[in-house]
Length: 398
Picture (cartoon, rainbow, N blue to C red):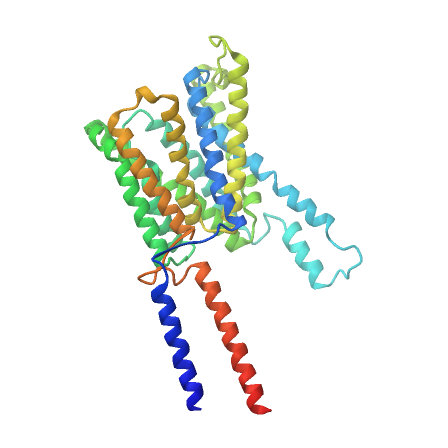
């Protein structure tokens, strides 16, 4: 008995020595499923890049209509990928099974359950809320586009933990709180040049921009909530609210065009008359639709497998990539203050993303306690300890 107590004390001392010898920072390997978190910002950046190219060419006549329609179409086309999983589920279903079996019931529930049944009134309300948020976000964006505004990502990082906690009841751990704090510090640094430009005329626009900064986090949190609460796939949700919002948008702009122009000339959204290289602009338009569709698809998959906070913390890399590309293109036009401050702020934000994704792990103040790597290690150690105890009990019994 005394020997077993001594052995336990020795093992505890060994563990304490290992903890003390552990480096302050550990670098974990990137799981293959986590690569989607870093692919998503790339496609987001590409979509915004080709948008800037189209804006420079001045081919868009109706910005408001174009932006809202584009956003809705990307959600619709991304949602169409739902049918791939639907038909795969149908084709993979075994033929010779009992209709009353649990397998048959579960497959029917997952793939054939109607979206709007008698118990889906709350679901319909949430989908309508998503439509309103989708349209209002673009309306606010167009209105505030001509003012000096703080970056929306600063507000995103403030509101996404709040909505995730209130709506999804998600818990944050120490290293995640630290990551969000580092991200906010980085965004504050990035906003310094904006602070020097802001005037009294920009205050109202910034207040409205603050509201817009709460809209998108609420939007993606509600998508996750619909999946958790009603078991509706995010791709299916995207398709439905995209179609509903598109219908509302078209009806609204038809009424607006008839009242203002007495015809449908408002829908002439493009003007290629003054464009010399029409083929290049056409390619830009195609890519501007293609890359955001891929981005929306990846974003919806991230929301399905991960949390909205993880999505936004990783997505904050997108403006950093866009800034690098634009800086390379317009090297002589950038101000010295921006060239000095932006890299610092964005590198801090990138660092925080690596911390949240547990690629960089801090081994002090309990910051590594709830990371996946060390949780897995503890599980392995506990299993081995249980095996040792069982083997010792067998030896004693024999």
